[in-house]
Length: 200
Image 1 (cartoon, rainbow, N blue to C red):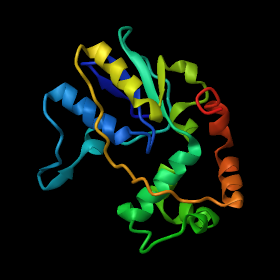
Image 2: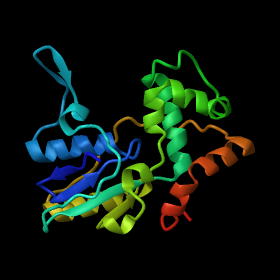
Image 3: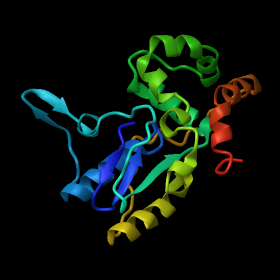
Image 4: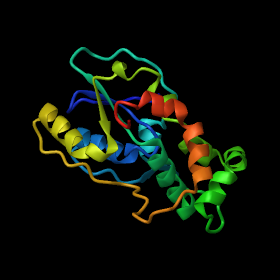
């Protein structure tokens, strides 16, 4: 995993797709540099946060300085799936050229994952990016408890930190059928086992 070191807060952050990772990249960039990130070009090549920090990678335990703490953000797997679905079909993946109802999306999931690299990457189970033992981390925050993350980072930096949300997928609800829910619970079974402390 492309872990992110933040000198200002002395944390090493392990990002997971659709778990506020873009928001935290922007926050850490601003803390380190004193100004908000904006896209720019070098020699005609567009540069963004994923170029600067690298994209998420599969989990790998790393050595960190003793004064740093390792952190990450977790999310209910079904909630994360719905958020990713809305993000993908809402214009973030050219594979989808029109509206796709969520249960149709689930029933066609194997085909979608074969044909869309973006969907395959963003719908991977969280354990791929977190490993199989969350005790590796000093702190793990639920995405619903961002206030706790703000307080934690504020305490470590001596600053008042309020995370700004980026890439929110909207509040529209999407009803999963019992069949779709069962399929997703099977797909994300290892995540539910890993996250049982956070999502019983």
